[in-house]
Image 1 (cartoon, rainbow, N blue to C red):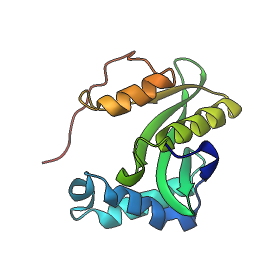
Image 2 (tube, helix red, strand yellow):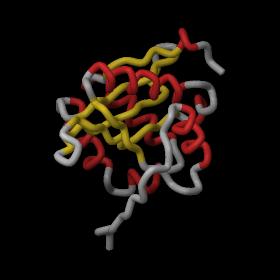
Image 3 (cartoon, rainbow, N blue to C red):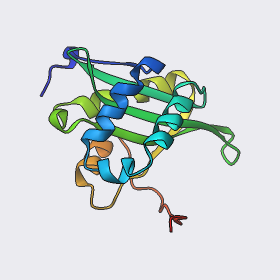
Length: 153
């Protein structure tokens, strides 16, 4: 565990793109994410960093980005309020199980509350026990079934 005060969570800026990409590339999803899609990922990250429809936070330890979370914010016509969908939460493998993910979620929940985002949603794989445990620790429950239709060939 890294002491809470040693992890700095803050709003991401354009200058953080390289550090965010390094975290992505360090994960086991490296091949899936970067196999010919590096430009796509970089361009979309830049769009998220400059959009008010996304909250992107980074976690720093010793002046290096070691994790990030991004959340899409949207109005729910059904409920008449704003909601958030956590798109990604990644922590560099060397910093996993050390409190970084918890600090990112704490900061995101605090920010969502301050911005009157009444619900946060997240999707993760059924077999991703670590992620399910982390989200459960922060009050996320298995509420609904998420269906997916892939357009990949």
